[in-house]
Amino acid sequence: MSGALTYDAGVNPYVPHLAVITHVMRETGANDVKTFRVEFRDPSAWERFRYMPGQFAEVSVFGVGEAPISITSSPTQRGYLEFSVKRMGQVTTALHYSPEGSVIGVRGPYGNTFPVADMQGKNLVFIGGGIGLAPLRSLINYVLSEEHRAEFGRVRIIYGARSSGDLVFKPELERWGERADIDQVVTIDRPEPAWTGRVGFVPAVLKEVAPRPEGAVVVTCGPPVMIKFVLSVLTELGFAPEQVVTTLEMRMKCGIGKCGRCNIGSKYVCRDGPVFTHRQLLDMPQEY
Image (tube, rainbow, N blue to C red):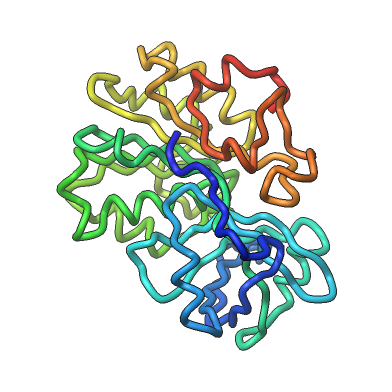
């Protein structure tokens, strides 16, 4: 994987940049996922915050704490960052109650990146489940940007959630679905009266769609049980472990490999990941 973590000598990695929440977007019907757009209060912070899809940042709510959160905006969308956050703990709950205009802390970027250079010239298959589409969104919008679209082949997106209310980024799903250079399938687990789209679990839909492995790279993220069955189906379809990329964010805390909370064997998810190939996962203890 590319994008090894480096430090700027003389800069304390624990000190966050101050950032202002400029827009809050409600993503799900239950209002348990929101996307926060933030801008650095000091524009010069961008000189030290250069990121690529796959990386994450430590987002802090002052007086409450901080949490590692994937950057869901693309670096091609300049001037702001976006974080899609599911309300799960103290920090994420405090963030959900932070209105536009609130000042938060952002430090990073951390972790490695999706292997963008290795993906050039390849057909790309994105497989997401629930909030797992958040880190994929950064790469999808990078690939679809005017400055990079010609570098990649055909794009296929397979995305699912438990219900239509749990689907995130609905306006973008609609725009992606209208593009002639994207094959997109959106599915929910069980039928709903007003739902006219696909019904079925993501691994089952993947098996039906059956993308071809020749000249393709798969990028997937979602619940662990979904990932487990997606990897099994991809193997049945003939994808080699080196062709499949996923991102793990389990148990990350400090973001820089110091607290020892996210290690899997000798690997630290925050420092050696969070992006790993299926091949790398097969060589690691089955603790993810």
